[in-house]
Image 1 (cartoon, rainbow, N blue to C red):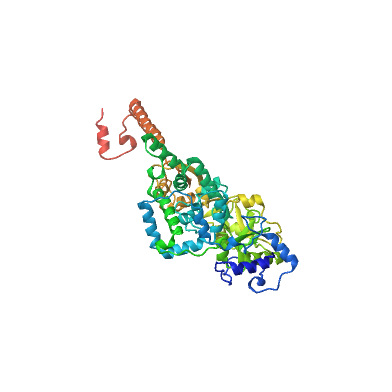
Image 2 (image 1 turned 90 degrees about the horizontal axis):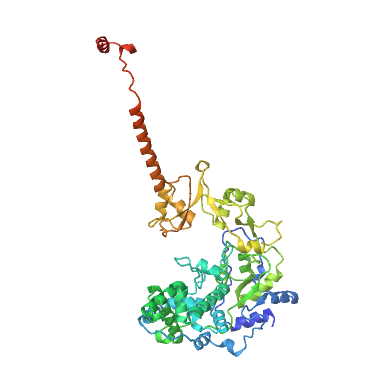
Length: 530
């Protein structure tokens, strides 16, 4: 089946509303040098060669090599029904569950928005869960974690649909650098989340405990189990002592499961979700601007980013991101327009800073306005760019090579305070005390609160944990208690030595005013002396 025929069938069979045809206005960045007007207007059938090239770029990432048949009987099945058939977790029935049910029931518009977002990704998650033989309730977990908002960020810096913390994300090979954050990648984060849940289930042998560990941390769950074992108490989920957030976590999932199983009971409606992929993977073999990719697909920039939320910059680096996700209706159009495109694809590239320099100097070297360089690279005021850092800069006409895989995977931006020459500031790493805050550390080292917050990437009113390493740049070294004691001891010793010297020194002969050539009363006193 050719991509054009496939696109026609998909347009006829898809149950989702296609995105608006008009293109979103790109962000205020240097304009793409070429535009493909064909992406927005009807076209004559593509030449056979172009179709063949486009077909090579299209793939269903979950079923590589398989043909997609939308006429198959199971393709028109409601995905919710498939989900219900895979429910395996033991049901909870307590006040926590009823509290969650009441919360969702009272917010039908929220449930509608949440399930509409989830419908884009559910097929792929359900498919992956079933391949692993896991309970399909786990496919509902993003409803609890993020309401299927792919760019969601929690107060503790957990990110993405599955809410991975930075360290946990790195443990499961989710790359995080200046160009991309795979915690927001739909496919990569789903793979990592299911890997993590499988590991937790293997450790605890119980899905409820595995879910508690996903929320609270496996170490905390292990300690709670050990505590109950020591007291001779049961060690199931309901019997463990845990924070309210974790106590409410599995009941919330149970409530969503109950709603999916019987939405009418809660006076809620679920959108119809077809039992076939909502999006396809399209191979990316060269660096390409995000705005141009959206244009070639004939969708808005916002829609493109909903499917590819992992991009941190306005360019897709082929060495690190080998595919993009696009709705069925636009995947073939993108692949054919990309194969037909003969102009530059990327107007941005990566530049490694050869020495520590100011943003103004970096901007001058790369032909950018300083304000534009700061904005695109998120460089705060009064900071220098350290040697070895990677900056995103305009790609000159003479640049033909794409960004290398090594640089695309390891790029980082390292900053240092732009201290005045007389400051001679040096970097220090100190341990926080019991009550240390950003303001107390700033006062101790005679620097501004904003500087301490900036150096440690925290808010101006943040508190530090006892023993936490704090970065400070200062020329002032506060005296420690030992140093103060030494100074005091030296002062006491010096005072005693001075008194002893005075006592041992013979008194000098008294000199009268007459001897100094004085006049008046002192002369009379002198004449009366023996």
